Length: 338
Image 1: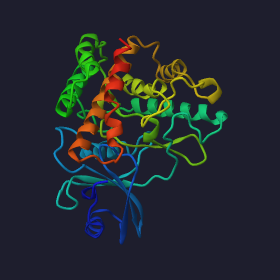
Image 2 (image 1 turned 30 degrees about the horizontal axis):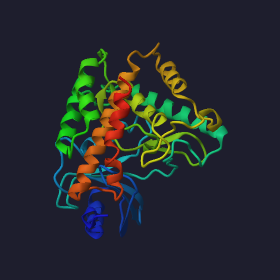
Image 3 (image 1 turned 180 degrees about the vertical axis):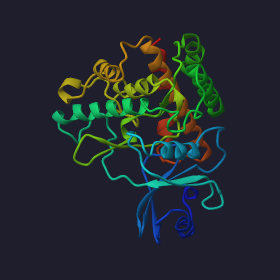
């Protein structure tokens, strides 16, 4: 762990006392595990617990680590059915801790890192996955005009723009040649499906471990990590989540491939997709493999960015290189879907 990921807790405590209603120090700081992109900290203050998300130190790729966008979307969703933490304060003064950051409320609950859910009984796992899909559908049903997010992203050509963005991000972080990534960069633009006229709010990183569940129920209490959120095609979120059903059960990013889903009590991919479609009134999904291939490409580009930051000494996790080394494997999984 790099020491420069931390900050002067006393200085921050005095700042928050003047900018967050009800905040009272003194305060201690604890870094959460994970948070490959934007380091995340638990603040223990006299007035309670809070969560701080900051940009990482060092040179940042353009448009990456946009904690200000995270804060905006959390604030916009405050009075909707979408479960989120409460946005409390955005600090754009880099002199306070060395980078942009925001503070939000702390949500008590359970976070599951392994999609096989070994902590739960088989009879409980299906309900948790159903709650996850329901939460995703609730998010995609948000009226972006009504919550003030109509300009949160551009409408139309979502996948064309996303492929362009992630191609640039990958090239900026490239440390060697990955033939599978190059193959997807060539194939994906030629196979983009037609877009609907009305975009949805898309989370962009809808994974099991980005959800907080109630302690004693399978209900989602908060969706975390909104850095990649934008307006776009909601099927991107569905496909991105379904990658975990195809990833191997070993490795830093774990999945369910090869496991007996029936004995685990976890719905298979067709069942989860069908439930989502039924919930949102969609008859069927054409070009499903495109959505999956794009998701693997984007995750490969993200992994490559993590690797580059690790090599530059700016990664927010000591396991960043493990994530980065998965870029080629992830891209190959996308190539195999063509």
